[in-house]
Length: 168
Image (cartoon, rainbow, N blue to C red):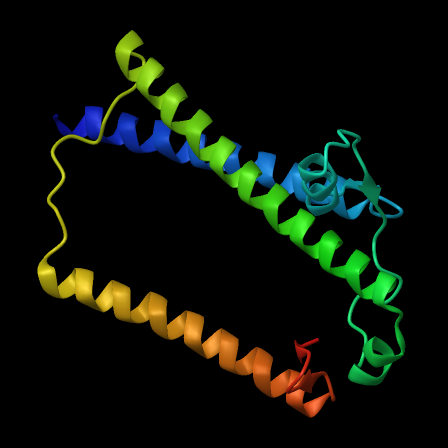
């Protein structure tokens, strides 16, 4: 690629990245503008009832207290605790599914664009050196451990950490 072609490729990739950022911003704004979180499908309850031969879909409401203290959790009934667990597991699984589907769509659309010829690659890119790969892994792992440690300290400081209930 000559200089003009390289500049065109960078402009095209920059525009594509800006479109993705704009779409992400619009989706986040839509999600934050909801007056309340709608009922979610109770995936755990649906699987449990399906195992017993009852194939009905169940929904679950958002917990009343999003980040309760240990005392509030201990005062909850077993039913409230179970609903709370089911809601958070359902949210986790739905986010996982959205990420997997989004990644799959990106990979399929990218392959289709490449096959049509409207996709311009950046040319031959060099792989990262072994040292750079190790540094990236250490940075990612260190960041994850640091954030987890910060969450534990915050929970300990605000009275939301217990030996029986974990991080609340």
